[in-house]
Length: 459
Image (tube, rainbow, N blue to C red; front, top):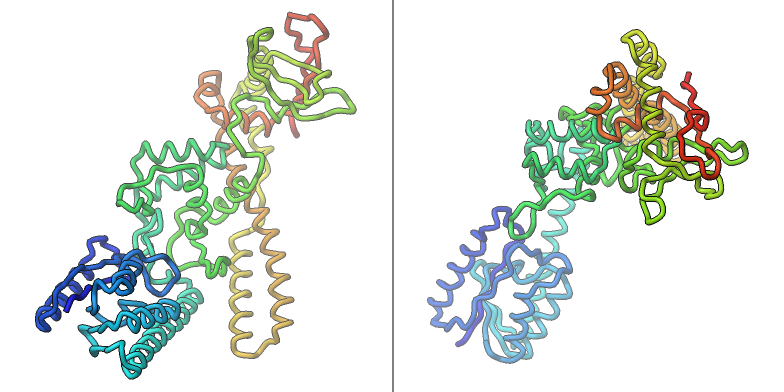
């Protein structure tokens, strides 16, 4: 009798298909004992039969049966063949029409030509699905217990920055800390991705062929958005409290970074010092400055008001004047310290407040589970706590940025220190210390006039 062998493994994390090879060897041995001729060995590796994904091997098996190229199938167990109702019905129907026999290494031999054989197949399929549902329920309960205790849910890929046991992987953790500081300073995600590639840090998420994927802005932002970096635990997409592992970056810094990452104005990288910072000096305008590139009649970069009738100004002399005024105002250590102290740091103990809120949220969940609290009371109290938590998070978001600004300002001891900063750091310093307004110098004027720029130091 001509038969086909079907093998499948639902998860093969090594990618080496060892489970499939073991199944194949036992199936070939069984076929040999029965004196059957193996026409084809069909393999679906690393594809689960429980879902709805297309399985090319399974489709090939049905094709061989329907065209009567084989009159029998050998598999390891029934749940290697299928574990969803749709595929079960298709397999039983194909077996009946092709008058096939299904023989299992760990199971009976089923004659699909008889009602008793088809009943046996249906019962085996139902038992397999029942076992999957029980396994899924056990995993769900285990995951809920792990979430309640702030532990990592078992399984899954390694998180970037962490080992499998959630201890830090030093090189990756340092790259994340650098990225957090860079994003808070205004560095683009594309530049962060390029820096990570240059450092040789590789994401645990790799291509199907095993080759590491280069970092992109999209994969970088997804990584930096993960609450696990701040030692926060999530369950079903919601942050539910502090985790048991050590954070890579402080929670306040992480929330501050999320505020910046959610800012729609971050699209693209601004390359001009005063774009969006300086404003139009005309009293009824006040729009933020945009910029335009060189063209045939004006071969230089220009600042301009969105209302094009108000001004078009050369970038270079304006930037030069603003930087000179800035450094003059920071010319001594005393002046730099004085300016830096005006960057406000909150005095609220934000960490203690968030810890208290997380504890109260956990207590509410426990009380509701123990039926000591009604759903309405739990929902109302949870909503109020979340409002308080969001207010604390907004306050926390400003703290790391303020600390960074103080460091940048106190270190500006001259033009060389200024030139060592990238454009995003420079913009951050100017925007925090100065209010700048631009106006036209008048039609045809070619000589730069400082009177066309209004600069006021922020209090």
